[in-house]
Amino acid sequence: MSSAIPVSVITGFLGSGKTTLLGNLLRDPALERTAVIINEFGAVGLDHLLVEASNEQILTLEGGCVCCTVRGDLVRTAGDLLARRAAGTITPFERIVIETTGLADPAPILHALMTDRAIADALRLESVIATVDAATGTATLEAHPESVKQAALADRIVVTKVDLADPEANGLAERLRELNPSAKRLTAVHGATDAALLFGGEHDPKPYDTAPAHRHGVNTFCLRRNQPLHAATLSLFLHVLAEHCGARLLRLKGLVDVLQTPGRPAVIHGVQHVFHPPAWLDAWPDEDRSTRIVVISQGLEAGWMQDLLEALDEEVKKCSIS
Amino acid sequence: MNNVPPSEDVDRLRRVLSGALRVWQVAGSVTADADEPRTFLIATDAGVRLAVHHEPARGWSIALQDPASGARMPIGTHAGLPGLLRSLRAELAPDAPSGRLIVAAA
Image 1 (tube, rainbow over the protein chains, first blue to last red):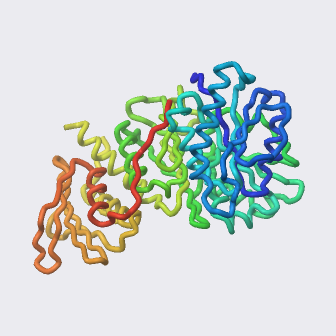
Image 2 (tube, rainbow over the protein chains, first blue to last red):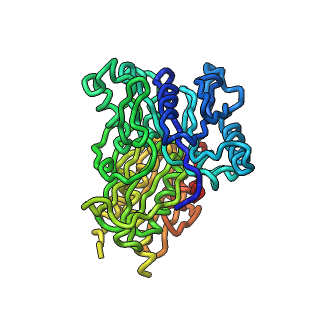
Image 3 (tube, rainbow over the protein chains, first blue to last red):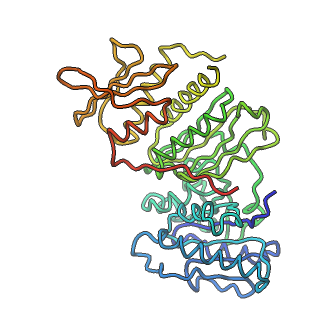
């Protein structure tokens, strides 16, 4: 197991309850040793906690993209935290939680955490948590593409304020299932939710059973394959997607039956063109032994991706034989 | 061994190429050449004509095709689909966004 410090990113649209959720989570004794990086100054008073404000001029939210400017400062702030932890000048935290601004595209933040040399070796992106307001979430998803992307990139979606509205009754729950079937869904009232379910990373195969859906320019589908895939095919496939689909590939997450590792499926996980190294499970998590790759994209075609995968595997097979 | 019938294989390759045009937002069509097996004709609305030939044992070749005479001028060969797609994008959609796979730290 990696000794890297787990990092969780809390995202969600303006007013969706990120800070309230964070405030509640940090009162949980299990999260006592948590460092927090907040993009907005003064967002919440966390007097018993180790708070680092991401110190930069990103607060003019009307100014458009804030995520491009946050990246450098986030890396510096995280790097400084790590240095102070190593020097023993702060409480040795065991986890970092980053709260993004409500208008932020989380992808560049995730990319920084996954790839920046200054921090990527010491930190491990564990989860992306998106808050969605039960009462206003549907309208927000309709009106604000940023909120769609925030929910699409999440591992966990917390529907907040369920005391005010029933997300099953008003269609929000179904909308979120369509948008991101692989995310675990929780609810919160006044920010209270089960912290244990928000962190950690057990592998649940159920989300890979997803029906195709397409709304608001974001479509979700699952590629399936019953034959094992050559390891080289998987690599080529991801390269081609990253090269040609890039930003339109919001999220890809899959269980892959790799020919060279029978009985040990690979877990693949990417955000746009940035992927985690494959993780190899010791065994399949359920009876289904087929490759399942869930894709959340902006307009990419399931049929094209399936054809591409098959065509690449045919080429690799021919190379392997000759 | 899971051998795919040639016709299905060819049609799948045609679909891969036509889907790539849509990914690059290039208006056009991809058809299988009726006269030359495993050759695909790409015609864009902007007037570009390319002939792409697939030889399973050798890979892919691309030729520019003169719309009037049908004469073909070879412009490149590729061992596999990734190189072919990269080259086609350079020819047909040089301004289309392109990226590079980045694998995060373990």
